[in-house]
Length: 136
Image 1 (cartoon, rainbow, N blue to C red):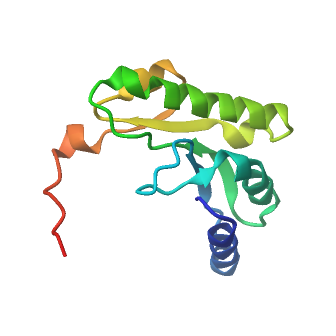
Image 2: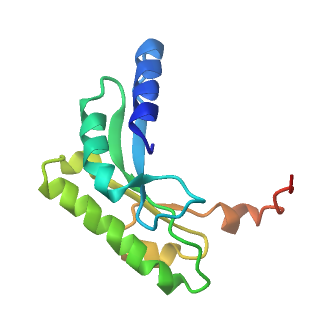
């Protein structure tokens, strides 16, 4: 989840469907135009909106850091997300709503775990690499 409009649409759809989806807020700490995520400056407002949602349940944060060859180069992004989470908790967001930190993929998950990841995404390690995207 990376925007208030998407949060509102999901919440309305969940109310209509009678479901209670659990969500993570995707945070953009690097400002990359090729990735989605809420900027750190807007994160508190989105977290508060998620807490006030009727059906949606906030469970944590996620990040997809810039691509790096050396997994250690991703460490500052993982530590940054943990720090952002800690700041949100210090600002009044319940820790139970931020229990999950989804960060780290097949090539850097060990570093992510070292920085507090509770969820990792290791699809490439399991299924192999994806074919290159077709060019338009």
